[in-house]
Image (tube, rainbow, N blue to C red; front, side, top):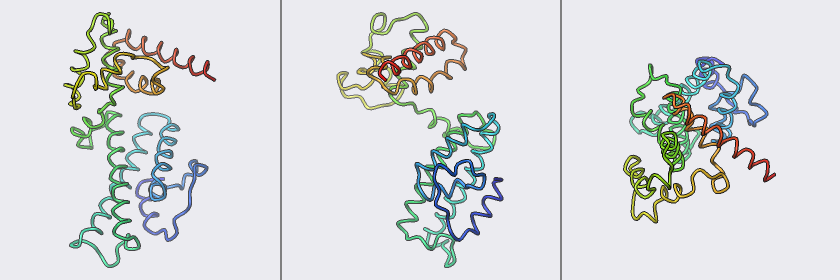
Length: 242
């Protein structure tokens, strides 16, 4: 559905459909209807749509379409919540102030996540991505640990043998600006003692797939190979557990 057509149809709908995952392939489904209904359902729909796109440009078209809906809704809700701009005939007047505030937060989060996704596809030409790109690259502690682990391993240095993990953990606190109390309380230190280990880290495959493109981008092929090997090992472990 085109963005403009979707917005117009959304404006004139009187009854919002009750949707579920079985409706995802229906071209008339509008992402904002899903988000009004349930955040998790909308997230699943977005992931489904991105997985069915043929190429990067198609993904960006879908993301921009969703972004227009989210941005329009944020602006409308902000106007309704502002005594100076609210209207007696506003589109959201059927909602209570509390419901509008909750929906506004939901749409702001969706807009932020969509901006981050667009920035991840390296398309910042029509968005002010300077700050958004920085935010989108806020990795989890485990992902940061794995980035450093594989970077130094790719240089031929063995973590826990050639490199003091106490110093590395402190350095991770410096670059991530995460709070530090003592080394024994450091989450980075605890992770460095075992990384990478699928047995103690069930999210390993997902995290490795997230950091792998970073090394592909800088052509560190040996590190990419190491990551692929670790992913394969983790998948074998999954099958063994079954």
